[in-house]
Length: 442
Ligand SMILES: *Cc1c(COP(=O)(O)O)cnc(C)c1O
Image (cartoon, rainbow, N blue to C red; front, side, top):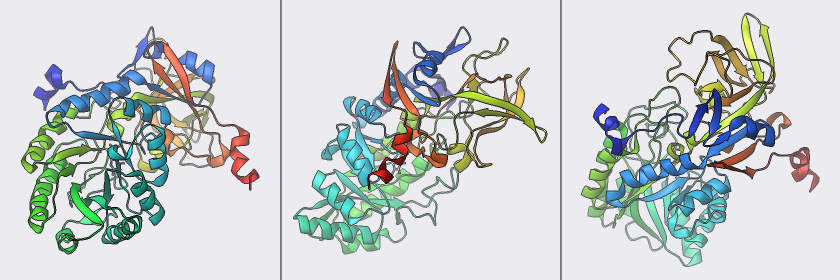
């Protein structure tokens, strides 16, 4: 790996990407974060356009040899402006619900570049997908394939399908986000998929043309992909022997990013294990990256409301909460946190939080929500903080705003896109009226 990271063509990302401390104050590209907090308020999601495009381009160039179909996983961050940027720069979409399909179409996606995943697609969603002409349905059960066939027959269409298999690999990430171990709900059982596939070779309304797997997320090793491709190749051969014309191999998403250290692999490392397999299979490659593109392209800016000591602990109470970023609560996730303008003696956030940080104060960074599980970090060493200070929670672009809710009747945050020295609102902060509108309008 080290050789790979050192070679400039395969250079890994920094966790800071286009976020930088200049004169001890955090900037997104050329815009001071403090200026954005003043202008748009907090909590605030800030995205760097240069980082988004840089990450997409890294995938495009790492896999250029096989001209992959890159379908941005819109569930990762569904903001229309981010999705439009992806579409404009050559990405299609991976959608997991009718709502996401709607968003993908609003963002400039078209049927031929959309893949439709999801373990529980309803007839209405299958219908919507067929009417749209999505390029592949990633089918996850026998029941779904038969339902899809039924809906397609009624519409007089033939549904293009990739079988999503669960390749039964060893555990590789948090148990709530590992999707390719035995016993999770995802995919068709690799041990029985052939038996089923053999029965639907001549289905009049369904055409099995691909194999799909999404292994879990975030994954910090190429090994699961190597094993997945290997199992996929064997399966493709057998599906072809049954008479299925397999033309697509979809290796999903799941590539990790730098949350805690410089722990993530570059796109080129995944290409090294995936590309040869795709060539061998003589298939077109589909990828569904999400976190890798948008994770480190966004941060959550919050303001300290109070600090207090209680029960032997030091609490930093700030205005972002679990309803804004639920990953620490839901997955025990680690996000770098650092003051936007750290006190003298502290520069940028440390690369490694396990190392000692001189002068730091150990604290729990919590939000205002009425839950003990409402925290962004526990037992974290940070520079001393005071009421009014701004904090940045890094690597929050993926599964941040996408999972935000109105719990405690909190207003969902605003989102801002920065491009060089320009910045613009891409989602306004919600209002109290927004909170009750669907109830008032009944
Ligand atoms: C969530 C998901 C992805 C994206 O995963 P990332 O880890 O964000 O890259 C891709 N494909 C499917 C089917 C998914 O459910």
